[in-house]
Amino acid sequence: MQELHHFINGQPVKGTSGRYADVFNPALGEVQAKVPLASREELDAAIAAAAAAQPAWAATNPQKRARVLMEFVRLIHRDMDKLAEALSREHGKTLPDAKGDVQRGLEVVEFCIGAPHLLKGEFTDSAGPGIDMYSMRQPLGVVAGITPFNFPAMIPMWKMAPALACGNAFILKPSERDPSVPLMLAELLQEAGLPDGLLQVVNGDKEAVDAILDNPQIQAVGFVGSTPIAEYIYARGCAGGKRVQCFGGAKNHMIVMPDADMDQAADALIGAGYGAAGERCMAISVAVPVGEETADALIEKLIPRIEKLKVGPYTAGNDVDYGPVVTADAKARILGLIDQGVKEGAELVVDGRGFSLQGYENGYFIGPSLFDRVTPHMEIYKQEIFGPVLSQVRAGTYEEAIGHAMDHQYGNGTAIFTRDGDTARDFANRINVGMVGINVPIPVPLAYHTFGGWKKSGFGDLNQHGPDAFRFYTRTKTVTSRWPSGLKEGGEFHFKQMD
Ligand code: NAD
Image 1 (cartoon, protein in one colour):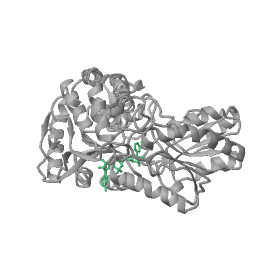
Image 2 (cartoon, rainbow, N blue to C red):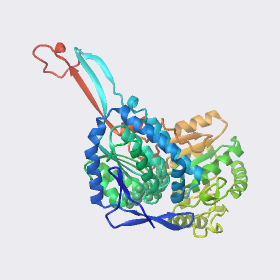
Image 3 (cartoon, rainbow, N blue to C red):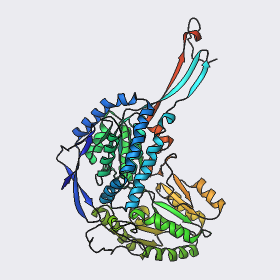
Image 4 (cartoon, protein in one colour):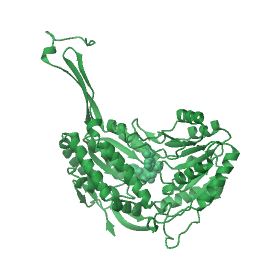
């Protein structure tokens, strides 16, 4: 059995806590490796080493830091197939999806190569007699990222690239369910020329997370994962005086207006609802057609498309639409929620519960499920299912439809399908959700914009990637300078306006 490691001070390091977690191959339902779960002492040592390495990195000019990221991009392209294969093996997603996971992370690394420009401060010449004023963006010191299982390449890159570009040292605590790709990324950054100690990948569970939250040398924490853990990390991190941003769960609604192109809407729902087995925080899990006719037409178009979906292991080639869910626990939870939906009176139009694949009977596969006539009081509506399950909630009017999305506890992403510009504009303006698509089902912003949800999907006031990332990983210092020729005799006593 393969034993994974941590990556500390530029090299793989064995765990010493004696605690391990199983890492599965979800397609086979077998344990393929064990990953060490770090103790508080291991975390503290990794953080202390990062703190020792950080000042020299902060003093390295930003262009030199950016060059390390440039080389990192090249190495990722070189190793794309290897990374995607390792990712699919532990996560279960298809190879094209795994490459997409790497690619969307890579785009943020590319954006961060612009650090020399993005870190420039502001300057006011002659703010007063002989007085100049300027601001600097300085790194925070040692910062940490705690990341989820569902994008094991993209989200670690969203965190590490801006943190490092800004001159920080970075502690990554990836998901213990698929830790291999984050470790490979650390090795590639090392090969790209990142000095030792600046990126420490420490595997672990709650003990490692708490060690990060309690360590006074950690200045900022970026988290992505489920909402209960996001709330916990936000509260404990803030109480410890850290800068914290946490991105949580989702229940993304797609409103389908009667004037929408129904084929486009149905195609969009298939990709956004079932892609990556629904294990995406930007997956559409609720379709809200407006009017009975729209609802009936949508169901009619969805069913044959769902029946054509190919579920299988990533090794079966590119025509597989989605793979297994990540663990046996996740599978049991999703199947339990489908059962509950049936009990609560939702109409299970397509039932994916009995799905089985020859040769992969132990894999964590679930067939696609479609519920109709879901109502807001049902548990399958309130909770994030995070599986290949799409729910249809019928709305009588546009107001009722937008009301559902607005009243839901989550506010990560949403979409509207319509041909009417007025409706689309009204929707984009009024909806209380962070990322909005107009005839675009998964509106994930590109690297140079920012990514973040509202309500119970996001805690903290800056988003991920884009210019916000450079704000999150730096603090601003403003300098007022006056040279002797600008000084008046006797100095000044009062606090006054500059003239
Ligand atoms: P998770 O909350 O179980 O785990 C996320 C991280 O928290 C992992 O590193 C894990 O080790 C750690 N963790 C787990 N339990 C903990 C505890 N009790 N105390 C401290 N740390 C703990 O999430 P997941 O299952 O890995 O990921 C799926 C979730 O992430 C979904 O809810 C999904 O919507 C969300 N997600 C959100 C975004 C976003 O940007 N909003 C993006 C991707 C995923």
